Image 1 (cartoon, rainbow, N blue to C red):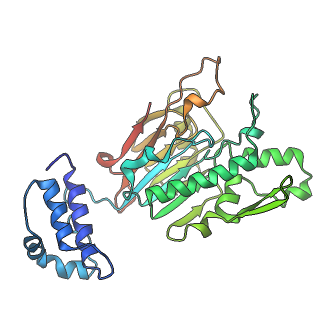
Image 2 (spheres, rainbow, N blue to C red):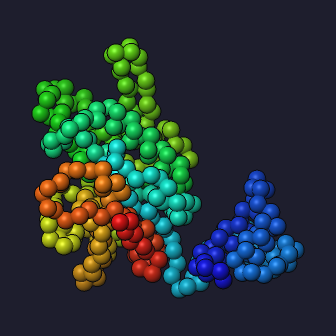
Image 3 (cartoon, rainbow, N blue to C red):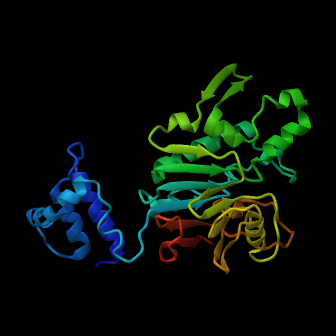
Length: 331
């Protein structure tokens, strides 16, 4: 093989065979042969490839389990790309995730997608309006989903998004508050919103992502955590300065609440790390924002922020496959 994981190569070969058997797909046996030759260094003809896979035809037509799936002894049932802490407008470009295009079943957004910079408690030398930030966040998410092409998107909110409700609570009468969403993500994913430009006397409607992106299942949890398989993804309000301490506290919380899980993915801390506690694996996934553009901690002598994300492979039981799971640190 030429610098490629054998399982990934066989998986790709299997998927191409399925596609060429679809009369509505443009993949031909010549394409399958080209793919095979590219990664094996051989010069096999399309006829040889086609004849060699005749024995698999009954299994393919019946929709049988991928015969290559157990090649390395670990069946990958679900591929999850978990990203968090974009803090739009400080987000990293979508090209950061180019290695995962077409390789993601679930794009898991683990909170702090928006920064809510204008309504934060931190002093600021300039101001990004909430409307401008919401529009940019929505645009970025559409670009990200279209770029990665996942089958499903699952989104949590983070402590920055909950600023939206906190700000409204302080500035609106409780009767008016009942008309408002909890976070800006609720507007982006579920409800949609309108921009009333009083200066220009215009009104622009922005439809929710669940209506805009029709070929991808969109799930907004309206919560700070979710569980996929036996992995919990969370973005709490609490923070501990100890190494992996926030993750450990979260693990104890979910254990006490009766959740059954074997791994936990922590956003929020802007750190990258992995830690085994008994039969549970804890991850801190870093942030996906340009930390050089954020100046919240200038002069405070705090620990440096780490940019990163997590790519998880789960088996059919929802357990992570450690040999295929990647914790990526970008700086």
